[in-house]
Image (cartoon, rainbow, N blue to C red; front, side, top):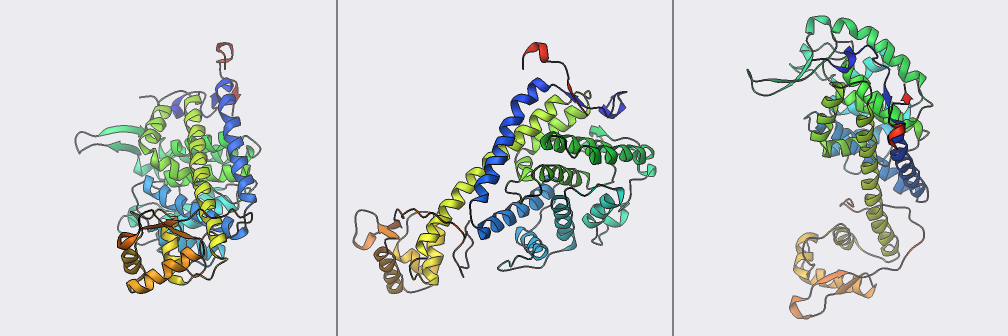
Length: 398
C-alpha cells in the first residue's frame, strides 16, 4: 500500500481552485455573519456563548477518540483559566485540564509560532495523569523508532484491518521540521484551507504515540482563530466532526491513501465548517430568543420558584404545565404553585390554554420584543438555560 507521504511530491499539496472557489466564499460569509451577530449582543451573553463553545470543543474532541469527559468539570476548568465565575464549579482532573490548556493556548495565542517545544507541552498536558497506560507512552517527545510500526487498526485479533501506517519514527523529526516550517510560513493563507491542511498534514505524520487526533484538531482551531484575529469562538468544529465521525475517518483514510491533490479532503473539511456554522447560527437564534424573553421577564418581580419554572418552559418543557407539575418541580404546595402562576399571568408572562377548570394547563405568553440583550440566563437561577472542466487541474498549492 502506498500512502500519501510516500509520494515524491509530498508534502506539496495541491487542489482544484475551481472547486474551492465555489465553497470558501460561503464559509467565510457565514463566519463573518456569525461574528457580526455576536458583536451586537451584550458582553455577558458573548462570554457565556464562548464558554459553551469551548466546553463543546474540549468534550467533543476527546469523544472522537473515545474518551468521555464530564462537561461540568470541563466548563469549570475553562472558567477558572478565563477568570469567569462558573456556578456550581466542580474539580477537574489533569486529563481535563490538559485538553483545556492546549485548546486555550492554541486559540488565544493563535499567532504565536508553533515550535516542537510547544507541541511537546500540549502532548505532556494530555497525558500528565499517572495511569498504567500513560506510563508506557513516550510523553512530550516524538515517538521513537522502537515503537514502529505505528498503525491505525480495527477489527478483532487475527482479523485486523490496517487503515493507515504512519511514517517510521526515524523520519518523524525531519517530517516535523518541515511541518513546523510550513505552519509558521502560512499564517496569511486562507484560514479554512490552512486549518484543513494542518489537520491532515499533522495526523498523517502521526508524530506522537497517542493524542495525534486531538492535537491536529487543536491546530485546525488555531488556524481558524488566527483568521478570525483571535476573536472569541462561537462555533465548534470538533463538535461537528464528532457528529460526522464515520465520514471523518473514512475521508481521512481515503485521502491518506490517495495523491497530494487533496481537493476532496478540502471539500469535506470546508463543508463541515459550514455545517458547524449553520448549527451555531441556529443555536444563537434559540439563545437570543431565550435571552430576549428573560430581558422582558426580569422587568417583573419574579421569585426563584418562578424563575426555575420559566427557565424550563423556555428550554422545552415536556408536556404542558399544570399547578401540580409546578408544585412538584418547585418543591412547594399546590396553593403556592397556583398563586405563583396567577402572578405570572397577571404580568402577562404566562397564559392558560383554552379550557379551564381543574385541568387547566399553562404556557408562555407571547412576550413583547426587546432591543437590548445582555444576559443568557436569569440571575440567581439554579437551572442553566439550555468550476468548469477547463479549470479542473490543480492550481492551488502549498
